[in-house]
Image (cartoon, rainbow, N blue to C red):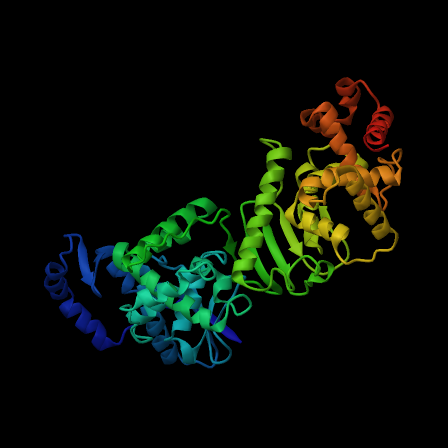
Length: 521
C-alpha cells in the first residue's frame, strides 16, 4: 500500500531561524561578489531571480511514500531529493511542480513510462542513477542519450554524488574516435552505449567522450545550450547544431578533423522494450524485433545484419532512407497528406504493407513495400498494376540488386528456376558476347528471361512465379513507348488509358510481346 500526499518542505526550526536572521545579509554580502543584478540574489555560485530563490525554498515536487515510512523519514527524504529538484530548476531543466517521485525500500530505480513518475529506492537517492532517471523523465525517449548522460554526470559531480572527472586529457579520448571505423560513435546515440552494437572497451570511451563534450558545452555556453539542442524535433536542425559544437570541441582539443553531417539524421530510442533497436527517421518509425533472423538473405547480407555494430546499422538505415528518397522523387504526390509510416522488421511469414505499417521479413523487399505505401492512397486500385509498379520501381534497390545478382550467379539450386536463369545468361552471352554486369544489364537480362519464358498474355492475370519478370519488362516497355509521365497518370486513373495511348490493355500487351520477340528472335 502507498499513501499519496503533496508536502511542503518543513525545515527544522534552527534552519528556519537561521534563514530568517541571515537572509538579507547573505543577499547583501554575496550579490556584489557574484556581480548579480539588482533583481537577483546569489545562490550556490549562481545569480538567480528572487522569484526563483523563493521557489528553491519550498517543496517543488510531488512525493508518494510507502506506508512503512514515518513522517520524519519522509521529511528527511523530501529535503534530500529537493536538493536534486532545486538543482534541476536552477539549471532550467525542470519547472516547479513538474517532477514526481515514488519512494520505496525495494527494487531498482526506474521511470514509470505511463505517468512519468521517478521511482527511487531509499538507499540510492543520492546517486548518479537517480539523477539520470530523473533526467529521463524530462526528455523524450528519442533525445540524444549521450548528452543526457553527460548532463547527469556533471550534475552528480556538482552535488558531490560522484568524484570530479578530470578533463585535462580529453584529447586522448577524442583521438580514439578520429578514424573511419570509430568516428560514427561520436553521434553518442543510444546504441553507442549498448553492448549489442558497441564493444565494452569502446563504450567506456563513449562515456568519457560524452562527459567531456558535455562539460565543454556547459563551460562554454551554458547548460541551456544542451537543453535547447535536446528539445529540437527537426532532424536536420538537430544534426547541424550538434555537429557544429562537436567539431568546435574537437578543434579545441587540437585536432584538424571535421565530423561530417549525417546525410540522414537518425534518432534512436532508449526505451527498446522487446525490440533489438528502435529508431526514427524523417520518413518512418522503425522497430527491429529481437526475433529477427537474417535466414532469408544470408547469401547476400552479413550474418546478423542490422544487429552487428553501430556503424553497419547506421549505414544501412542511411541506405534505406536514400532509397525512399529516390522513390519519393518519382512517385510521391506533392501536397498529399500521407499517414505516418511504421516499419517492423521481424521473423515471420511474408512481407506486406497495410494501413501505414510495413511488415518485413526479407530486407530486399523493403523498397517494394515502400512503393505500396507511397501509392496505396493515390493509385487506382488495380491489383496487378499495383504489383507491377511496386516491382518495377523497387528493381533498383541496392539489396534487391544484390538478391537478384545472387539469384542469377550465386551457387544456388532452385530447380527449374535455376535452369531458366542459366539459359538467360547463356543467351545474353550469345547476343552481347561479353560477361553480364547485372547492375548495368538487368533490364536487358530480364527481357531475355521473358522471351525464353514465352508467356505474355497473363501479365495482368494472377500472380505467379514469373510475374516479377513480366511486370518489370512490361512497365519498362510502357515507359519507353509512352513516357513515364503517361505511366504515372495511368496508375492514378486507369480509365485514362484509352485517352493517353489510344489502345486497350490487350492491344498494349500484344505490342509488348511483338517488341520483345523483335529484339531476340
